[in-house]
Structure formats: structure tokens, C-alpha cells
Image (cartoon, rainbow, N blue to C red; front, side, top):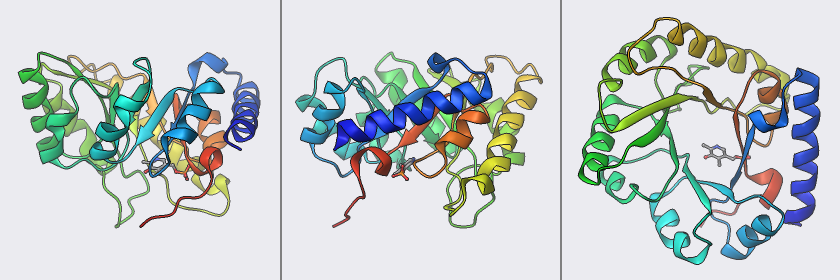
Length: 229
Ligand SMILES: *Cc1c(COP(=O)(O)O)cnc(C)c1O
């Protein structure tokens, strides 16, 4: 099932790239494997997709030894400060930096390990009450501070768009995230030159790609629906 789903998702990604006049290589598919077993992840790897998104540090720690060394791990979920110490050497990117306090903790732990953390700033672009992330108007000031942290490299912005029945309803949010990135890059803040936009999930990744996504995070569309215990 995973293989068939991946074929379909890949087709959709290519179509969206074509429609937007973008090169397929500009978009990285992250297979969101949270709650899913190693066997399904191995199936994904066999089908050519070895970049995974998880939302719990413990789950990455647990799964990591069971998959090949060259597997790519992305932390995409809300991150508690007391879990940051497990991340150096484990994940390629942290998508969900939603406070300066969290960034400070990342700075501290990565400095201890003499590593640089690649991060994205999570933006609550639709201003939903229930969501984590900076409000769009807070991002610039937060970045001015985080940009001074030597063990953090800010690569771009991330958003979790609202759950909607029609993906078109999220198009404007994706447009706004991209505008925010361009706008902030234009301010020439030292150490800030963002290129990545992590946006789009199973319900809306094609629209997100049309609006400039460089990472799409697809879970259900690859691994099927999730059961939480
Ligand atoms: C679970 C999750 C996804 C994937 O959601 P689907 O709708 O299953 O594709 C993407 N991003 C984040 C941050 C998630 O937590």
C-alpha cells in the first residue's frame, strides 16, 4: 500500500511542479511516519523515499537504530525544551521552532555537541487560537535575536495550515508565508537568508507546491490514517 500511495503522491507533486513551472528537485517530500511501524518505513525506503518526519523525540530515538544510517529525520512536531538534548546528531532539521526560549535551548544543547542546528521558524499564519507558532508580525523580532545564536542556522519558515475540506481555502495562507519569507529576507538581517518553506500536508500539498513549498509533509496520503492510543 505504501508503494502505491507513494507513486500517486509523486505523480501529484510532479503535476503541481509542472503547473507552477518549478523543477521537481526544488521540492522535498517528507514522509510523515509518526505512530507508524518500521516495516512501513522500510517499504517507503524501498520505494525511494528515505526522508521521514516525526513529531515526538522519543519516537525518533526509538526508531533511529532500526533504519539505515543514511535515513533522513526531520522533527516536525511541537518540541519541549527538555527533549532538545536528544536531537544533536539525530535530525537534519527542526521544523517547529515556536519560541525564542526553545531556540535558546537548541543553541545551548547544540553548542555542547559542537554542532549547528538547521531550523525553521513555525508561523501561525492563519492565526488559529489552538496552534503553536509565532504570529506573523512577531517573526522579524524573533529572528533578529535567533540570528545571533552561533549554533543555529535559520533555513526558512514552516506552517501548519488549518484543517480544511477544500485545499484552495489554504492557498492564501501559503502565499502569505512565502511573502513573509521574501519580506524578511529583504531586511538584510545578518545571518538570515531563508530559502525553505515547509508547508502542505496530505490535504493541500499540491496547492502548497504551487505557492512555493520546498518541503511538503505528507503522512496519511502515504501511510494511511493514524490510530492514537
Ligand atoms: C502529522 C503531521 C503532518 C502530516 O499530516 P497528514 O495530514 O497526515 O499528511 C504534517 N505536519 C505536521 C507538523 C504533522 O504533525
